[in-house]
Length: 107
Image (tube, rainbow, N blue to C red; front, side, top):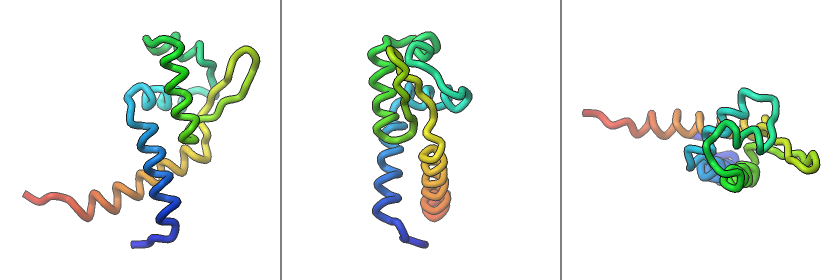
């Protein structure tokens, strides 16, 4: 098993996992993956949550690097950060392939 970027990879994986630790954030990412971009108001129409709640979830996803925002006064346009999204998918895939397969329970 390789440990080339152990520190960077595990820190990135933990950051992505933390951002994905809420069902609304997962739903937002799934929605954004099927859109080119959208505004906060668009998400408020899709999800039955207050704009402040949506904004907080967007902030967490942005801090993790999974989405990016572009200021279009007076709104912010959000979309998937494709480079980090691909990195996250690869890190999760690698994690589950290595750790789940090696530690599978046998009955």
